[in-house]
Image 1: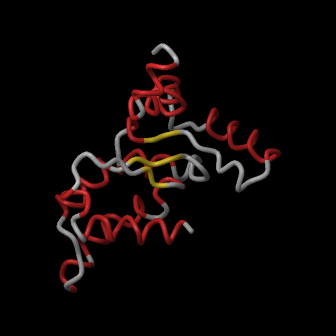
Image 2: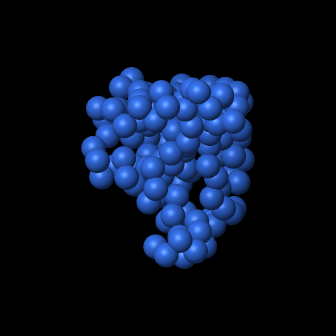
Image 3: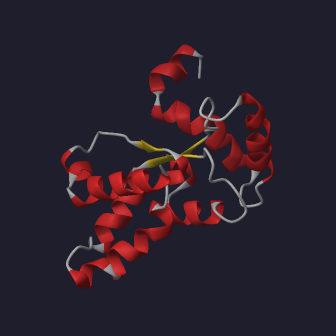
Length: 143
């Protein structure tokens, strides 16, 4: 499914869906699948072969999409995700209930101990970014 997420995101970008619908917010699960890790390939390799996307379009899309942390938060993957997008576009996720509840504490621990995240960034990812994205919920809880 991370590959399916990647393919779907690439199709949204390549087909101009994000440009045609500027107010549409999309949250990609699992840190965007492989998109953050292969974004440069779309521009560097794909363009000369006739199927690429120009670098400006890719960069704009990476910064426009949202990504949840279900699965990818680790000392290996977090820096790449943060290089692909602003921390304001990352939302906490655990993959519960696809994963059993017993697996969630380990994911929370990985998030809380990820060396790429400082306390302010952790708070934004775990709470504030979602409230910014969903202002109706924010107003209901008194933010």
